[in-house]
Image 1 (spheres, rainbow over the protein chains, first blue to last red):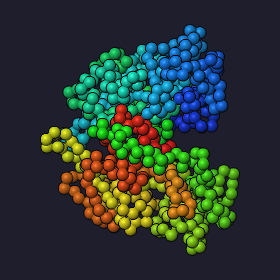
Image 2: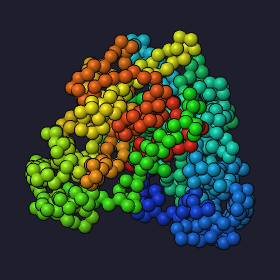
Image 3: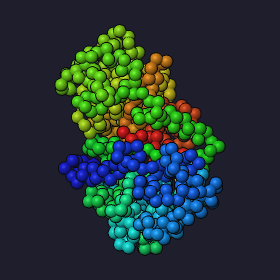
Image 4: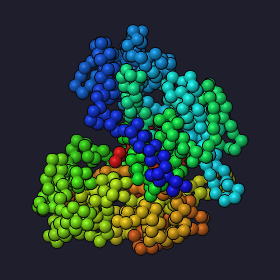
Length: 313
Length: 313
């Protein structure tokens, strides 16, 4: 199976595209990267590009220039900090200063220096990439195992979603069956079960059987139109769920408009052709790795492709 | 199951120990790390600590000081370079200059800037960590799935090996069922099948059914007694193999002296108590991740533990 993935296939081109998209050149510490650390109580919680830093400096009561970055000084507890930053964002939004704020969703993300640390404040979801805060998400790989009548061998089919053409980001592209950012106050599994119901009508009892199988993490700079970049720092928790043959996802809240059950070679073709939302392509690639669909003897970039999904936090 | 892994258990201490052992502080670019890049034709192929660099500089016909490191100039093709470096190592060994060379095994490793690049020379295996060259290995996780008669739930049991008390490195510690470095001229799967037969008498036909499930990579500084450190840069290709109930490993070449079939909670306990060779502990932790034994809602260091197994190459 993996033998079909030689350099002649579209696969190598797809791998190189993923390596470019999530290139370490977009990461802090790399030459050419100009992100400025955002600090709270001396701990780094975010990373802002120069164009965003310029806007934040206009609020010197909240954001103070310090050695090594910009420090959030508005408030002494999570509630005060949340309020101070919300005030800044509201004003920037009202003045139309940062285009991305037009995507305001009234959904709060917790801001913390690392996954296990207490939240130091909450910010509106639309502002998370502007401040370059670590965003956590939960993604579900739902699949079916079928035995071939003739050969007796097992083949995996994966459920995928097509994003609504009305989504603000990556409209119409392929996505994992269900996925979502982890909002303030929600757990990882809780988020996965909730999104699975909202987006694909997976019964919570079925979704709860999904197994956590690891996490992916990466940092990349996302351009917002031509205006300026934002630093997306993501940590995605991955769940695998073998669903029964008679399960069929249904359109829920409309974020996903259609669902497909595809054999893995067709899924791989869709990665080849760039049909996935980029971070979901990496979730699929991780699934292909874990289920033996990629082979080190046939994939010269095997370690590099693995490494790009796990850029050290 | 994962619920038993709270901060109160030995698990968190074990995680912290692994994070320390494979700490990024031991990696190039980290403060305090003093490795010097080793170059061939302008490409980095290794990393040497100051004590080793001092010895190599005594051979200015072979190792030349350049901006950014030490460049291997002895020879213009792989064969000439191999010979030049072998001459240096033979002399250092004869003079007893580098203790690690006493572990000479007459086994050649290929030296390359990355997995997919052509080999630029071969070096004796014992010298690989002295030159800090990227070492590739293949590790086998062999397991059995058993259904509980009463609950009907499935449980995984893992086959493990205990290293011979006579091994030069990590004698008597636990190891994966079979594992080995990839020698010059051998493929990844070929190495896994070969080691599986040599170390545990896994029939090649059975071992060939193992699935490649990813790779781990990390860099750490290994002290050789009190003398000096060597830079171990490893990329381990991982294979999973579900073996039949009636399969039992047998002692082969004597590298492994005993085998155990343990339920995963007992395997995890062995990680807790530091009973594994450190890099094999990471291979086991990766298996626990992929099989749902660790849970992000119960493990505050979940992303950090994942990241330490995937330090970007």
